[in-house]
Image (cartoon, rainbow, N blue to C red; front, side, top):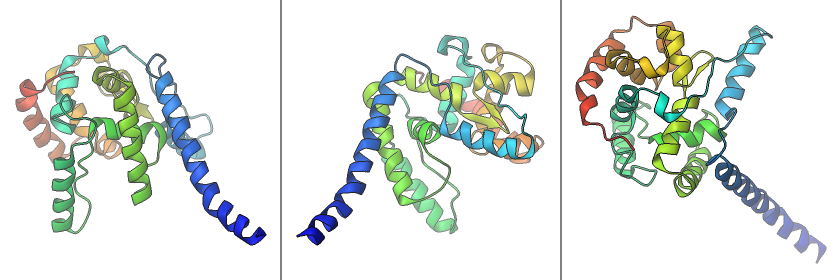
Length: 230
């Protein structure tokens, strides 16, 4: 009998821990409908890395309201990262399927297929590691975000916490770091370039002369007018 109870708890305890974790995520996201997140999992991880080399290192990040971020940047990011952001319910299954097929053809990960909401879910709570469990958790958090928040609120948080370089997070810090101006005053070409940097910001931070960065920026610049803002 005792052995049976032990085995039962051996199975039940991890399930209970997972459930409690989901409840924590759900409640935290509910608070962020009204309050702005002060930090994210990605911020904590990068700050720890920077402070290993320099104990006095600090992140560059400044929260600004949605209305004070250039619409040019919003359009550029939607075109570059998630063209159907205003239409889907958090996950673009067609994009995921295409990314999976492309990665299989290439034999390596060259496309992600993640939506803006999925990227936010990962940035807020998870890590950059790749595993089926992490991806499943990302999907759960994605639907929590879509349940609690409007598309505009999701995008506002994303724009303020996404990584844009080594120690650089959010649109305001990125605009000041790269161009010495506020996020409200970004030009179309500056906005397009920042949008192209998002999949690999630290690389482009240290390789500003990348030929791909220049080509892709021109493409996004031409397509920005088609973006639908939330």
